Length: 430
Image (tube, rainbow, N blue to C red; front, side, top):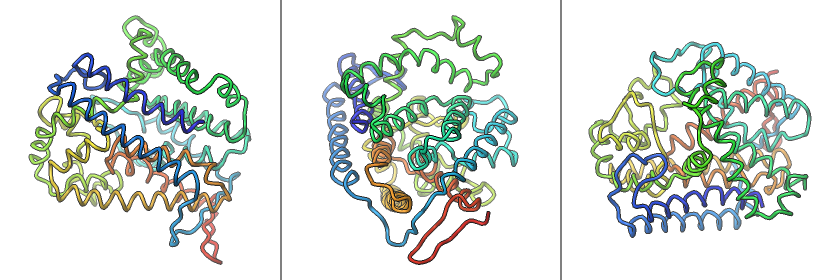
């Protein structure tokens, strides 16, 4: 049930955006300021391609990842000492909150007036990638203890204070998935109401919450002090009408308008790509968040496709815009092939390797913690929908799923994680 709800939460906004663009003959959502040049038939065909991909993802999810755990033989099994994980994760979250309040580490500021500090405290805080690890923590370490619930609350507070509100939806989906496995009261309520009625209630209730959270996150992103936030949010200049909030919520959940923009501006993006003059720039962009500047000294000169797509609305690359956008798997690969076929094939090979490593890593955790694949299958669906939404190795892996490895290293050296391979056990140092 939860998987179907999660799947529909991704699919329905795409259908809504596509239908609205066909009827209105104009962009909706993120690229609404751009002029559409495609006809209704073009938009319909692009929508049809994505619907076929959605159907394929659902078939793969139900046919493979709901039935068996896929492992790689060279991966050791990963076992969590749940009690220690709770305390390590609590300490990390407290440290990140301190770094956020003291130096703004993690805050998503749009066009800061002055360069963001990159002190040791700032860099260490960003290494932990708790936004990636929360998916693992929520499902593998759920034991009902107070510290578990406290950690989830601290995580949500931290992410909202950083200017990110999408994590509320992530936690809601994970909780509903766990409730379904445990036959909890929320699951029973939704089962009585029905999935489709629950979806309507979700969108109506979500829009109500978005009237608060949308102004909140943009107040934070544009540098408003925490002490002044609540007054500004409820002032007339920052208030958001309910139906405007509903439209923004659905637009936020849909990447389809930017996918159409990507197809429309493919030639312009290719020109912007060529103007950078860097060979294999999209493949190399994967390493930007992973390698420090003193080793990868020209990484700030690499402009990945998502950033070029955002700039294509203005016909030029704007280095200080600090923005990127998702075009969806099909549009992203089409654009990249138009830019450089060699870069496309190198990026595709890297994608296959990273996908295999992610599947192997998750399989090792399932096996090491004596979980059934159905206990965590939502992670596979989340990963595949992420591929469909983005397609970019940098956005999907470097900024998200590889962040899990950073926390696993921390857990290993604090003794909260044990590696087992055949008859050997590898314990942490503490």
